[in-house]
Image 1 (spheres, rainbow, N blue to C red):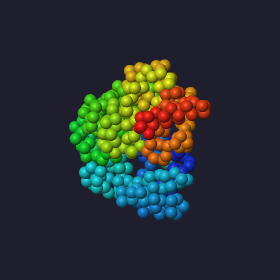
Image 2 (tube, rainbow, N blue to C red):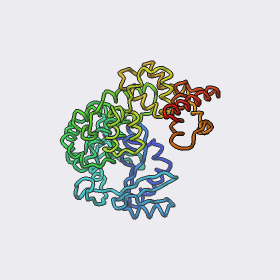
Image 3 (tube, one colour):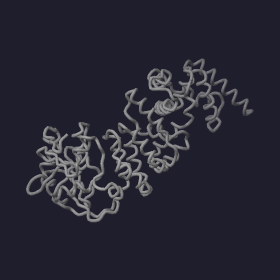
Image 4 (cartoon, rainbow, N blue to C red):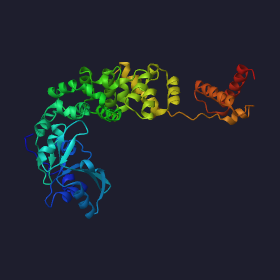
Amino acid sequence: MNDTATLRDAPWLTSGAAARVLALLDRDGEEARIVGGAVRNALLGVAIGDIDIATTALPAEVVRRADADGIKSVPTGIAHGTVTLVVDGRPFEVTTLRQDVETYGRKAKVAFGRDWRLDAERRDFTINALSVDAAGAVHDHVGGLADIAARRVRFIGEPDRRIAEDYLRILRFFRFHAAYGAGELDRDGYLACIRGREGLSDLSAERIRVELLKLLVAARADEAVVAMIDGGLLLRILGGVSYPATLRAMIAIERALDLVPDPMLRLGALAVAVTEDARRLGVRLRLTNGETRALDSMGHRWWRLAGMDADTARRRLYRLGEARFHDRVMLAWARSGQGPGDSYWRGLIALPERWRAPAFPLKAADFIARGFEQGPALGHVLSLAEDAWLAAGFPLARPALDAIADQTAARFRRDHRL
């Protein structure tokens, strides 16, 4: 790729909601461009997500123009120059050009400006600082086009300074390399991340969680994780031992099964060997209750899934449910040392497709009819009956169910001397 480029054929630039917002702001003495990830992804030939727009117009003028054109505006970050415009149900963040006055982490003092170069220079990486105007011309003020061509993630200016402005950029450096980079990490950036690793302790768990989970589903996540371990970074984030080989195995299995990358499965592979690991991660990364429970279930005696016979496998599936069964099998498979083509693990992960667990057919009424009253004893005898039903192979015929109920009731009375 040359140091000039165009995106004249991009459909989102020539028509639709984004083009409407761009046309609204790119006139009457003001200029607007699409910036950041949409430009980067379009040049790399990968799917684009959100489309962000930068403009010389001040926030009040953005709101005035939107109101005049019947576009809904939301002051999502108006103090920092950001207004969200909603067109056809799709949100577009519009931010007035800025330049740094003072830089001290995320609370940097900024002023609105009209200089596209200064606005680009305050961003994190060169590949994220590209912009495209309504005519499709790509503007590059920091060498981003050369880095796009080389698939290189490089900090703008001095890496140490960029990192000190926001230590989350350490994680973003590895995340963007895992998603878009090729070859070795940019050496200057990598060394700066290592020098700045103490600053990771200043970050909120919520911000780390978001970046880490995005990193784990990136195309080269396993390579980025190894580099973070080698640089002494991942231990500071996770607070425990990491297992990069298990993560690599999990990625290989997902790809072999044509599964969408799952961030919690990959986090489990990377950092969960026992349930205590799941609880530590839940606190350290401020995971949701559901995410913590998922990791906890993955780590609970996963080693017992190796070499099960068919009856035991069906009982495990019944007890865990399809989602938890799938996740625990995936972790056990990744830790087993067996490859993605192993027939045992492929058969086990496909069990829910071949067999659906029936609902437990015995009810409280079956034991009330046998002389039990509502209370703890009734719940206990039902639990024992369910165990017996599983051991019998999930029978559904009434005579077999009556036999299980009779035997369980008699055993309970005998054991409790009723």
